[in-house]
Image (tube, rainbow, N blue to C red; front, side, top):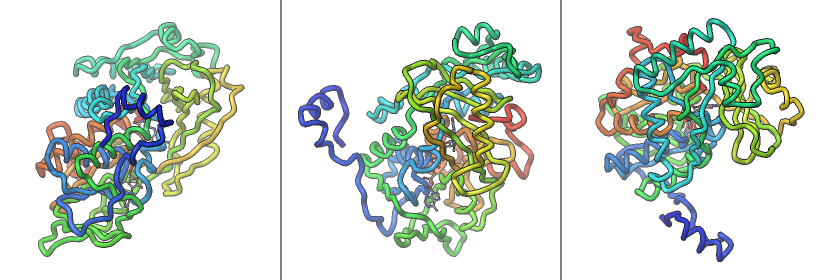
Length: 416
Ligand SMILES: Cc1cc2nc3c(=O)[nH]c(=O)nc-3n(C[C@H](O)[C@H](O)[C@H](O)COP(=O)(O)OP(=O)(O)OC[C@H]3O[C@@H](n4cnc5c(N)ncnc54)[C@H](O)[C@@H]3O)c2cc1C
């Protein structure tokens, strides 16, 4: 792998940046590997990277039905924070936040992590009580979060309108370490670093079946590019998880919904942070290209269409225009959807499954981008050791049978 550095960029500039080699290989699939990862999003590629870099499992492949990062990883609004209510969630997401801080150095790839602060607006007495409770719970768990008055919130985000609107701002929770990162770069950075350690990244390779041996353990997969054997298979397929798990005869408590986002025409730097409003359901930040990145809600109906209803995006824009009236004059450039995998308690599953050798990382719903490094790190551990890392021990499949839920759904109602 040709390392990136100031000098290498300068030298490559002498030839117009034209001579960079491909950043990862395009190998043919081998007949057998020590482990397979299904899904070439950030979670799958990250898992392969940590398996190779920390657990010395290098004869592994990532199987992606389309192109890497073409799923939710490349479709999300990139909000990163760790101020979830329950200790299990805050610990897992904060593990990720700590890894984000040095990810560019670890991968030698600029993932453009920007800790610009995430402001979560309270519009009702209920919001105020819930967010204050979050602030206290987070601080008790060693996770930064602070409560701001409406005026302090406006000082942090000067374009914010706090009064004379339908839902006035009564205060806000601020996590200063939260922010955004460049989604494509996360997929590409993990792919490049994993490839350099010998991982085969195989695109245009859809998994169509899961092979089991006589004892019921996983034995490999059927794909559109042939049969591939492996004693360990990790599933990180987001919205299509239940489809894949069905191939192994396992029902998972997931529903798949379209979730949409949209961007405005690019403008000069104007928006210094990330703002989320759960109550009126909209969230916004500004990309380094200048586009305002706006997230909407999920559709009311399950679907695999990767597009959603117009009324859902219109509703999000109405909320944004209410909070930031000057954005009424902007034109929207494009919108898209992704398929998110939602669990009943809105917390993920990172666990072993009833099929020996088959592991599951799913249920991230509307909020798994922020978890990418942390989830991939503990999922790799789980696959390598055949037991959960302490940070994902509570995120089992069995909690939906046993009732030990981590109910972020009741705590927040939104998880971006
Ligand atoms: C519009 C939108 C906004 C969002 N905003 C945020 C946000 O602001 N912050 C946040 O933290 N999260 C957000 N999310 C959620 C976040 O994007 C996801 O939770 C996260 O990216 C999931 O990563 P992943 O690697 O698990 O999934 P993906 O990136 O979807 O990767 C899964 C891969 O599996 C592949 N696959 C599926 N089936 C097969 C098969 N049969 N064979 C082989 N490959 C297969 C898919 O092609 C896909 O590439 C948002 C999601 C959307 C859609």
